[in-house]
Image (cartoon, rainbow, N blue to C red; front, side, top):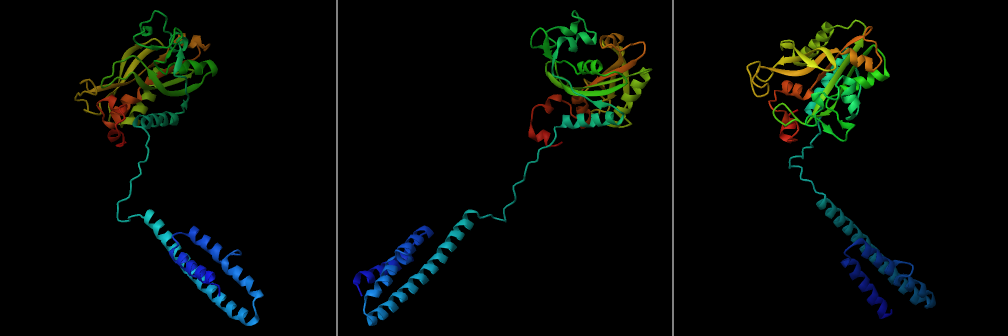
Length: 339
């Protein structure tokens, strides 16, 4: 037997035993037991030897092959086990540790109140519609019986983009847009954001929400307006909450009124939320002005209607007992997650 082959056999055993990964082991197998491996080459060369020598050497080479194959299998199992252990260690989970709480998003409290308000009016047959936040001067003022010299148009009250466009100061323009396209009978509510140049305080914000309401049909009276809004207030705040209608003025309604409810924070005693009056204004309302009907080609001699606009932000304050509207917009998670 050639000393080189014996040396290669011993080296092969050592290499298999010391292999550190599966790639290295596969390379050793290819060099030793593969088609071009030294054992294969040795077996092929046996044919040139005499019969007695060929049998003796062939038996020895096969023994070498069995030894190396057994070593290879054992090493392969060992490396697979190590790989698995390393993976388990890296992906180890300590089941004794407390789980990580998933933070689930929730609907903002004001949006919750808006949805609740809309559901009340939808049950009374009102349809929900929407309008643009960037309005024209015509829809925001002129069509609502607010002439150019009206104080509401002053620049310190509104956010003007240019001479003809502004961020709407109310959702009332939606009623004009709807009446232009559809004829009575109409019952709509229009939620959305509005913008006024108000200084932020406990009850005011330069950006706020409003829900406009409109009903138009033959023979609609102020009594129906009071009835609808009283039902709404009692559904939202409870039947024991007192409701007040106080005469007021709006250019697009005549007669007009403001609706107040007993303060839910102080129960009528007086607090910061209600300006220490015991009551809080939640909406303005009135009978649609005949001039508004004429602008949209609806005959005021045949049809009548009522309109109202409410602030869900202030209503949310009453429902949740919040005394400062700014809390809704400060995005303090500790505050918001309570809802």
